[in-house]
Amino acid sequence: MPGKSEIIRAVQKGLNNLEVAKDESDKVWTRKVKTELCKIGQRFGYSVYARANEVDEVHRDGGEWLWS
Image (cartoon, rainbow, N blue to C red; front, side, top):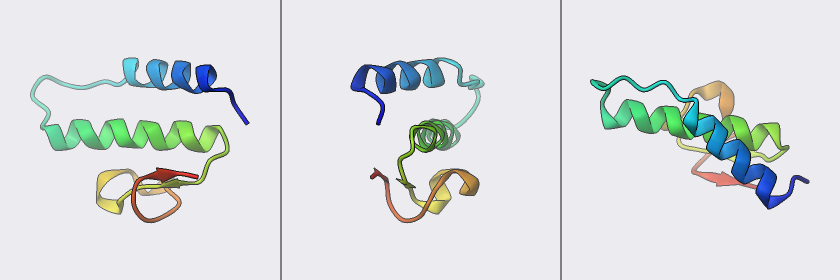
């Protein structure tokens, strides 16, 4: 299992690398952030649960927001 500091660095890097246009809506930005968090969680071996309409389907394992 990854350490806390490794997860924090991955989240910082992932969010810093997001491409967000100035004219994008909050909904689009939120989807990108949640999808990135799902990718990171899965990369570290967590099952990731997020609402289907808020993340890309391929990056979630089911239901509401949770890493388990």
